[in-house]
Image (cartoon, rainbow, N blue to C red):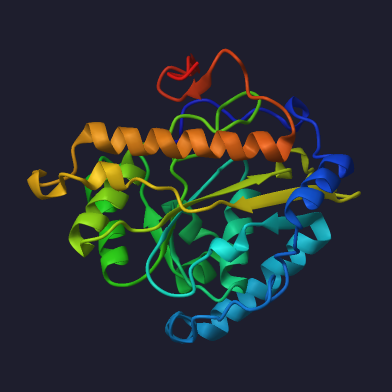
Length: 297
C-alpha cells in the first residue's frame, strides 16, 4: 500500500534564492558536501569504511555526487557536529526523494558509514537497488504491521556499533507548503531503547535539507540552490532519568515527546534555511491530514 495523500507540486513553494543562500553563508560559512572531504580536520572512520563494501560504496558515492552537482548547487553547514567515532542517530527531513541522498552523501564524504532505514521498494529498483543494499540500506516494509520488528532491528544496528540514519516522518511530507509534518514515534522508541541498552544517551542529530522541492528533474537547469544543516546534538537526557523502571519498551509518552522535539527542531532549522515563518495555524498532522496547533503556540 502507498501512503495516504500526495506531496504538493513544485509550484507550491519558491526556489531557494541566491540572496537567502548569501545570508546563510555569512551566518554559517557554507561548504560543498559533494566533494570529499567537505571540511578539513575531520578524521574518516577507516574501519567503518572498510567494513561497508568500499568498492561499491565508492562507485555509488561518485555517481550520486556527480548527479548532485549537475542538478543543483548543494551547500551545507554544521558538518563538524558529525562524530568521528561511535554510534549516533541522524533524523533527516523528507521533503523530496532528493533529500534522501543529500545527508547520506555528506555523511559518506565525512568518512562515516551509517546504516539507513529506507522503504523496501528501493531495494527492488534496477541496478541502484543493488547498490542501496551494498551500502547499508535497512529495508522498511511500509504498512506491514511490523513496526516493532523494524524498531528492534534499528536498535540492534546501534547496539552493534553502527550509526543509523532514519527519516522519522515515514514518507514524504504531506504539508502543502512542504514543512516537516508530524513524526512517527519510532524515532523516539529507537533512540530511547538503544540508549537504555547501551547505558548512555545515544547522540541524536537532525539533518534538515531545503531547496530540492522546486527542482524539475526532467530539466533541472538552471540549477537550484539546495542547503542542508546538520544540527547540533539534540539533548533528551531528561527522558532517560527513570529508564531502569521501564517495561519491555520505552513508554509511548516519552517516545512521543522525543518525536515531537525532533519535529520542532526540524521546523526551527528549516525556518532559518528558508528565511520565512511556518504556517501560524500549526504543523501538518499526517493522521488527520490537517493542521494541528503547536502546544507552544
